[in-house]
Image 1 (tube, rainbow, N blue to C red):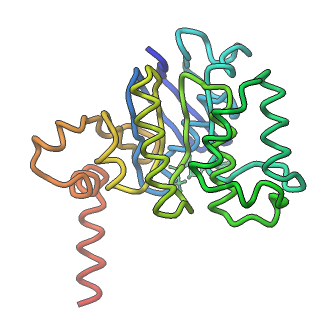
Image 2 (cartoon, rainbow, N blue to C red; image 1 turned 45 degrees about the vertical axis):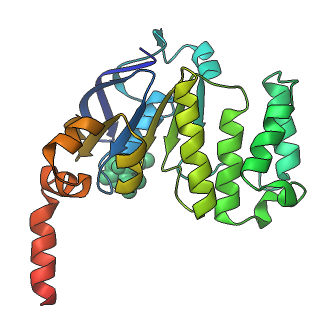
Length: 242
Ligand SMILES: Nc1ncnc2c1ncn2[C@@H]1O[C@H](COP(=O)(O)OP(=O)(O)OP(=O)(O)O)[C@@H](O)[C@H]1O
C-alpha cells in the first residue's frame, strides 16, 4: 500500500476538522471530494505531517513522521507556496539541486508540457495564479515521487494545462505510482479516478469506485449531493428562486 490512514483525527483547538478517518491509496488515482470545510485539506496536511494529528499514517509502510518519507511524496498545496522573488528557472534549479537531480531532460519536458518556457525568467511574484500553480506542480514532480498528494490541483489551470495534468496523473499511475488529490470538479473525479472518497464534516461518508458510479446509474454529482445531504439544500435554494 502506498498510503494508509488509520483513525485520523485533526483538531484546531476544540474544533474537530477530521474525525476517525480511515482510507488507503494503492497504485491508483484516489480522489477526495467534499463541500467547503469538509476536512480535505486538513487530511492532506496531516499526511504531509504539517498539522498535529492523532491516529496513524504510513507512506510505503513507513510512519509519516520519519524524514525519509519526504523522498517518496510530491505535494502540491492548495495555495502555491513559492519564493516569490525567484524566477521559475531559479526555483526549479534550486529544488533540483536540493534533490540531487542531474538529469534535466525530464524537467525540460515538463516545462514545455506546461507551456512555461516563456515565463522561466519572470519573477514568480509577477506570474498569474495558473502559472504559479503549474510551477508548484512541476516542483512536486522533480524527484519522481511514488506518491503524489495534490490539493485542488486543477484550480486556476487553463484547459490545456488541465488536460496535461490529467495525462500526467494517469501516466504516473501506469508507471506504478499513486495519486491522491482533492477537487470540487466532478467531471475530473469521474473521468480519471479509480476510487473516490466523499467527505463531509470531517468524516468519510462514502467510498466508491469508477465502476460503482457507473453501476449506480447516477451522476457523481447526484451521488455527492445526496450523501452530503446537499440535495435538499439545492431544492430549497431553487424553490426560493422560483
Ligand atoms: N488553521 C486552522 N485553524 C482553525 N480552523 C481551521 C484551520 N484550518 C482549517 N480549519 C477549519 O477546519 C475545517 C476543515 O477545513 P479544510 O480546509 O480541511 O476543509 P476543505 O475540505 O479542504 O475545504 P475547502 O474545500 O473549502 O478547501 C473548516 O471548518 C476550517 O474552517
